[in-house]
Image (cartoon, rainbow, N blue to C red):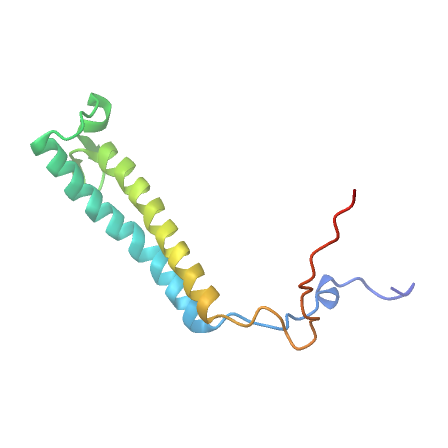
Length: 127
């Protein structure tokens, strides 16, 4: 930088040679909204069935009814919340695995036109 020029952080950043397709941004945004909603619905059903059938014993702290200001009484609120977080993590993990498998099968080639081909020789053993 010259002595009499002003510093501007925007001048330093080079533009990216690639960009994310808008469709993938939309799908990611939808997944961030849909997966937690689906996880909450599934958690509500699982906790209700667990209360009826007694699959897993639940502590009293998870089973208590919570009074929420705008919603009112919410039975099994903490059990639903804990189950929904676990199901959301599983859902995001599954979509990550599926996306990585699709990307590795249909994505860009591993080596570009300027890359050297990989060596297929085995190194010599010493000793």
